Image (cartoon, rainbow, N blue to C red; front, side, top):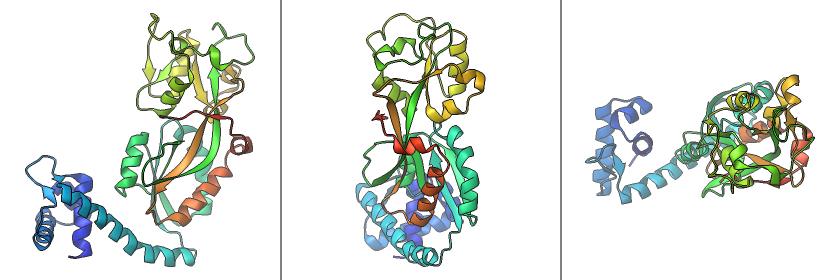
Amino acid sequence: MTTVQLHYIVELDNHRHFARAAEACHVTQPTLSMQVHKLEEELGVLIFDRSKQPVTPTEIGKRIIEQARIVLHEMGRIDQITQEAMGNFEGEFYLGIIPTIAPALLHRILPKLRSALPGVKFVVEELQTEVIIDRLRKDQLDAGILATPLDERGIIERPMYYEPFMAFIPENHRLGKESFITNSELKINDLLLLNEGHCFRNSVLNLCDQSDEREEKALRLESGNFETLIRLARQGYGMTLLPYLTALDLSEELQTLVKPIAEPRPTREVSVVYSRTQLKIGVIEKMIASILASIPKKLIEEKHHVIAPV
């Protein structure tokens, strides 16, 4: 049994396809296939069921692959400990961030990240929460930024700040003249929502009165971005809720249409999440420090009423 073979079965599990796994390992497909077969012969068990497409691990194979991930992690830890002890933070860092956080946060933190970690190349991708968690478990991401609490097995959550929900209400809306609104005034049938898969949508649904959900509505639209919801709200199709930093980035004209929500003010908890076996803790700590230095202090100090994203 070799570490190379362990690496091959982990990548084959990640990709569930021999050709793509071989490409990820920078070897030919016959080479990868032969080494996987040799490992199976040595162990006396089938790790993968090749009769299925895509190929899938057998039950014993799942356990072997899980242990292989642990072994490879522990081997990498020695070099990581040495590099961090010398203050060397280099290489690529793969970061997933959910779409409802990315547009308002990335432009604030990237300058500080470049300054704090000049030797690190950040590879950032907007992904849904469930994809981030899956890729963390497969070691395809080093960390994620998303809304918590999630309480996922094997995933560490590091809460950073608490972002209030803000109401975007056009002037001709029934609540347009109010200086603030209350939770009880939020009606699900009056709200323009993000589409399914966005955890901010789930938080809004958990917050709102849904007793009028079956009432007929002039327009029932679910969009993938806040910009579309804002435009439709201005055209008279309802109101919407926005995260605080998103509202803060609006033009002065649009900010006049943003209303606070009274106490208990609904808030989302934004965290950095990573696997318990993560090696790049030094980079994560510096990234968290950069994020905290890039946002309004009141988001760090004021927790309010956290609405779960699930």
